[in-house]
Amino acid sequence: MLPPIRRLLADFAAGRSTPVELLARCHGAIDELDATLNALPTRRDRAACVAEAQRAQRAIEGGEPVGLLAGLPYVAKDIFDTAGLRTTLGSPIFADRVPETDAPGVRRLREAGAVLIAKSNTPEFAAGSQTFNPVLGATRNPYDTSRTVGGSSGGAAAALAAGMTVVADGSDLAASLRNPASFCGVVGMRPSTRLDPTLSDGPNGFDLMSTIGPLARSVDDCRIVHSALFEPAAHRPLEAWLERLEASRATRAPGTLRLAWSADLGGVPLAAPVRETFLRAIDALRSAGVTLVEAHPDFTGADESFMTLRGLYFVEWLGELYTRERARMKDTVVWNIEQGLTLDAAAIARAQRLRSAVFRRVAAFMADVDAFLLPTVQVLPFPLDVPYPTAVDGVPLVNYVDWLKTCYWISASGHPAVSVPCGRARDGASAPLPVGLQLVGRWNADAALLDVAETVETVLAPLNPA
Image (cartoon, rainbow, N blue to C red):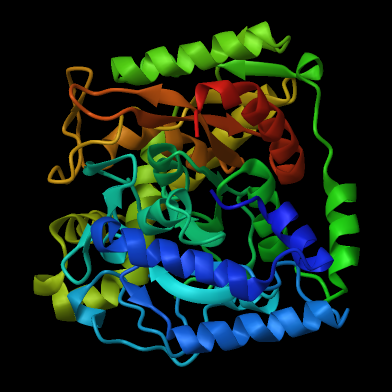
């Protein structure tokens, strides 16, 4: 098990370990495990990685200013451009594409000192929460290799769970950071929806649906990567970074927390093992002294607004490519685009009004609690040969994302959300599989949400054996 980022940086500063040694550990895990897991199918030249780690090591040893993530191995999602390293988007159309520049989020993490070592696998065009594609194959779950890792940031979540990396990024439209975090027993955060064209390299720099965000092995690691992404700062000596990290942490005592919770948002179908595991976590929080209120916001309009704006997003991103390459696109990607092509201005305007109303109702609900808790995913990790669930708890589903409501309703609300492990459950003859608990915070209060999540993570630790 790799130490947390805070300890790794402290060990670098004290000379107890080095970036080169850490890199070797991650490369060793890749060599041992990734032939089976297929989390990181595209890897950077190792000599280049070692040279970068050596530069970070010399800077740290010399007391020179460095970035917050100095010398930490990093994997970038395969929809984000990486200079000189293949970026396929999981599509045969781009199977051999090698970008010349880094995407903005990749650039920020590398400027913070992270050492790019590989690209993490993703579904074709990051569509869907099952990580498989015709270019690089399927990624297997470290807890049960017959099961999926979820998606679309599935390769990153599996790599973290298997000790192949320390830093990972991802993106989240419906559930793509939180779903794989839940399925792989790690932490994934969808930040507050904010307009930041400097972090987008897509055709619509003003998109407010999909967002970049961190995946990590713990809430504190997530906090640190989130800071590097969204609060980039000038380089400073590593000891100064450690002081700043300590000052930014404001953990809460369980007895000071007031949390709302709902197992099913008033009727969303939920697999029985997920419900039982979630309720055990609620009991553990109650026993720890947390004040718990069973209630949930009104999400009326979240379905329509999300599905409409999802269709618009796919047309903005892939509509032109569709006119030339429809035959080489996955059927569900085509479906998303064609849903978007049917939209008119009235439908789009209605979706924007509905989404704004959802945001206001959730914001009003959140004013009375420190966070709102619900299951991250409605099902357990399912078999690798199943593209997506078609029913949950006997309830037939409408389309291939219908099983992600507990995530995409939150996406529609614009509020920040983080998934933390809350226990394990079995599905038939499966190995014990991770289950995630999702915490939703107040808008634009991401740091406060992470403080609450770290307390919840600590309380639930006994339910998540190493």
